[in-house]
Image (cartoon, rainbow, N blue to C red):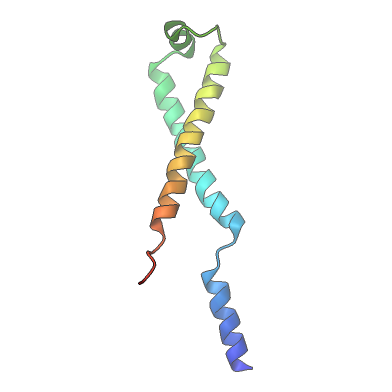
Length: 92
């Protein structure tokens, strides 16, 4: 009986819930993308960027929104890669 409790405790301590892993990626990337958007759009006007790039007209709010989500995608990918490479290597 004591051994069953010990095995159950060991399994609970090593397993991280999936939602905790998802939040560990999305929350820091959300904060970082917010800061990146503020810094980027403090220097660059989204309407001017669209004019120079040759794409159609876009409102400033649309440019800010698109930029934020692109920054969020980029920082989410970097957080996922960090979590992937943080795992220990398999022993041979």
